[in-house]
Every structure is written in C-alpha cells, then in structure tokens.
Length: 351
Image (tube, rainbow, N blue to C red; front, side):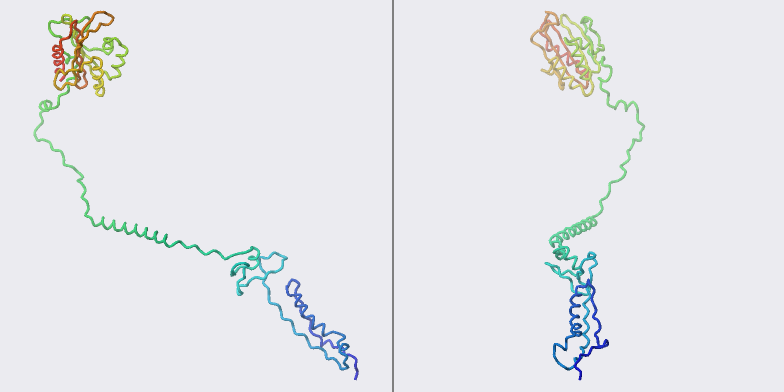
C-alpha cells in the first residue's frame, strides 16, 4: 500500500462561491464566510499534520451561502452615497428617533430632517360656542316665524278712500255785485296814501314852503327835516321805506305837521320802534286798541341854529304797514287835549 497522497480530481472540486457586489453591505461578511470551506478543502498539508498513513478522502462540497435579504434603496438618497434602508409598504413603519413611528415615510428623510413628531391633532371647536351659535340661529328663525304667523292672523287694515267728496256748487246763479260786496275789502292804506292824510283845518295858514294840502314827500325831503340828514336818509332806506305823504299848517304861533310813512310788510314794526325813539311818543294812549301813544315835553328846545325856543309834542302809532306821526311846535307848552284829539282823528282815517 502506497502512502503518497492522492490528488483530488477536478470533478471533486466544490463549485465557486458567489461574490456579492461591492456596494452591498454584506459583501465582506458573505465572502469571509464562504472562504473558510474552500481553504480547508485545498489545504496541502492536511495529511502531514495528522501523521496518518491512511489515504485522506476529499472533503465534500461546501454548503451554498444563503443570499442576503434585498435592501430597498431610497429614491431620495443622493447619488454615490451608501444606501439607507427604509420601510417598504408591507413592512413595519419606520421608527423616528425621539418620536412615534410614522407609516409611509422613508427612514432617510426622517433622519435627515432631525426629530420629527407626529402631526398635531385637529383642534375641535369648543362645544359651548357651537351651542350658542345654534341657539341664536334657532331663536331668529323661531322669532321670525312666530311674527309672521301673528301678523298673518290679524285682519287686514282697510285703506282710506282714494277719492274725497266732490265740491258742491249752488244751483242759483251768483250775483257779481253781491259777491263783490261780500268779499273782504282791501285795506285803505293800500290805495292813495294822500287821501288818508288829515285836511288842513279852516282858519289856518300855510307854514312857509311846506305843503298846506296832502302831498307826496320824498325820502330826501324827510331827511332834511332833521339835523342829521345823511344819517336819517340811510336809516329810511335801511328800514324798508316805500313812500310818504303829509301836510303842514300854522295856527297863530303854533305849527302842526302830519306825516304818513309806509314801509315793507317785514319792516313796519321796526319803523314804529324807530319813530318812537325819535319822537318819544309812547307814554299815553290816545285811543282804545292803538299800538302807540302821545306825549308833551315840559321843557323848551331851541330851533336849529337859532336861539328861538319852542315846546314840543308828538303822537306816534302804526296801523298795518303805515306809521303815522303828528308833531306840534308851540311857543308855550303844548295843549295835550288838542294833541290827543288830532291824533285820534288821524288814527280813525287809517281804519
């Protein structure tokens, strides 16, 4: 029996082990695990180390290595970087460091973003607010419905008639003369103002150049009667002066002047106030219902630019838009009774 070792035949050699790719994480481990049986099968000094003279039987083929489980590569991973495992749809949800696992999210995205927590829960509206809002809406609906029902149950309000009673006319023919007689008469002051001025009494004479019969008087002539013609002229125009008529006469040493002044409808009251202030005639009434009066002065006054003295008496009143003025200039105190009688006669002519 020969003691030389027997070389194994090529048929007895084990099949080559599969080498995993370089980018697989378990390539080194798989290669190291499969290298051990191959090295042990081809060790040349196997008989020498045992010292046995019996022939050594060749070792059987090595068991094939189990393939590593497939590793899913993240589609969000940067090119050329190591593959990072992430959960497939049929696998368990990936675990997030420091938080709860989130299903369906790649592990590398969660790791790259840091600590990711679960999305906050939906905030629910407080129940009291919903209850109050519902109560408000319900109250409005119920109130409107109740009001409509109440109004619909009331009887309709009848509308007023669209046409009033037609005017009736007398069957008799109207007499034009009788109608004119029954119509209100126009005021005497709206006619010829000169006809309302007192006539000069008999036995009297004219007073200088002044008119001794009722005549029209201009506003300039009225202003020249006073010592301040410019101011008086402005006052007449300011007070709504329209027209004036008057008469003057002289009896012995006493001079009389009667003047009627007519103003606008809105200015007659103010004109009366101005006349009262000018003549001071408002102390005693000379007739019933008169809105004026008469007054006599106890102290004499001087004529303009003269030392001659006179006693003054005046009466002022208003009827409608006409203001009557009566002035008396006497060398002795004015007879109050004669002034009162003269003012009463002029007042009655204005009626």
